[in-house]
Image 1 (spheres, rainbow, N blue to C red):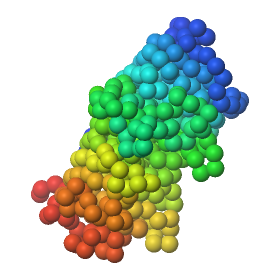
Image 2: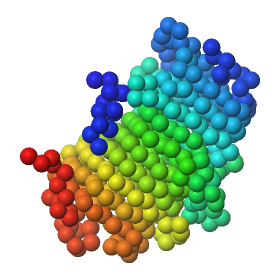
Image 3: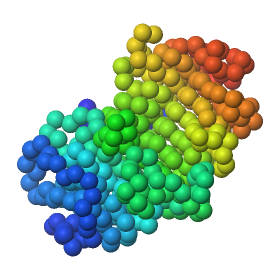
Image 4: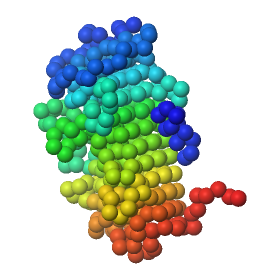
Length: 380
């Protein structure tokens, strides 16, 4: 079964003129290391290098071309349109960042997804950076804006996000797969498969898979973006991570961790430095399945939902299975203060996950069985 077939099946359960040197690419950012030799392109397909720098005007990438990112590429103006069926490959030390002054429109289809992947002949996690999309929606930091995690301050305004427009439209990602991302920008500082910073409610993220990233599968930094039909498979860190006041919705989410790698299914924060800053992280999550690596207690610890640092939210209709550390942990005074009023977890089915009795508020033990009489098994 191909990867494309695999992730679409999982969701069922829950010519080159478009990019030439005059397309707006300027500047020189980040290393441009040599990639491992790439196989010949299929007949009728051209390979085009995208140098490090800025894309400052409307640009279209087409499916009859493989685009190879040679460094840090920033879309600083206009709209980057990526056609269904297009492949974008990243060298070591590369990433694609859509700044708050630009937009991405990457609309694939079930038959022709857009694929962001490694440029290496034998790909592995962390081969390249990933996809970063930034906007002007509110985040809960002093001053209202911040530099996105992972990039040095020297990148300046291109990596700044946040603002006062809760609806800010950063564009569309649909039927898109992001593989082998998470290149380390510094020690213990990796990019995620997909990073959304300050994206507003008019942004569309639907049918997106993050596969084998070296950090989180998808991380959402504030904003009000709504996401649907997410498949996050075998990240080295968390599946879906949120912080800095995210107030959107997520629906139909699958996270699958592998034994010996990966951390939490959900890792949820408000603000890590001041847990009670507003706007408080308060997303609504509907219909999620979180699957741990099913490792023994002696293996790498994995947890289902880690709700901490003051996050609120409403988590509904969730299956949590095969985590060896805990099913759900509401961690710390700030988040426990939200529980029962602003942090609600309802209709959750726990299966073969380590006991959460010591860390869950003492209302019930969620090591197994069900909560609120929720049983996801089909009727006879």
